Length: 279
Image 1 (cartoon, rainbow, N blue to C red):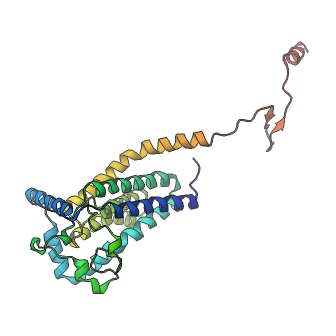
Image 2: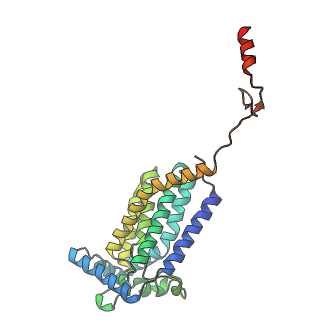
Image 3: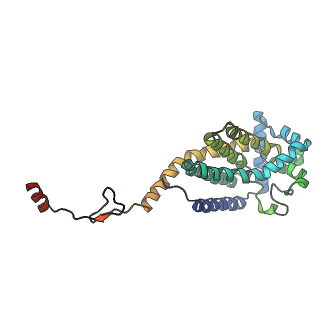
């Protein structure tokens, strides 16, 4: 299989990310609908006894030593770690890069479908009566973000704050974790592969940016992307094979042992074959 070219991969990733960012911004649901979905998730979690967001959010709000680093992690790590793992795979594990990249991209696009069909108000934007504190607004003096998600101050209008279901922070972190665990060669790398998605899940809930079920949905989206990756790669190979069919050398051109350039050979006729057989 031909090795991926870095410039083609960079262009492809840029196009997919631009489509994801633009689509995420355009997939805006009404505020009332988003709040309704958020409250429905919260009610379901309480019914199941898995509403872990409240205690984590209180802990992160009351302990700045936890809340401030968590805000920095939420605002930046998915933009840094995910590309770093992609570059690492491209350079160190090229045989596995194409499948890993396809998995990530398919899952990201599936997440965009979720944002479109299920706009969801994150816990931090619910009425204060529900007991959540937006830690990024609470500790905004310590970072570059303002009171609107993780966007830099003044750019909150360029984000879709109702794109909470599924959590691609968790989905991308899970992808990174699987890559580090599967292809890392040291215990430290594998330990990071386990810790990163777990820490990310705690961070997105503690900062009141996601519900636990958002994180579960993020993992489910990655699972769906993983299942779709093999057929998509097979289709891509067939299309590439059709478009890049190797030329057939004909007209008597053959390469013999020790030769680098095919040469024109005379093709014996049936009469020649008969005379050689007689001799």
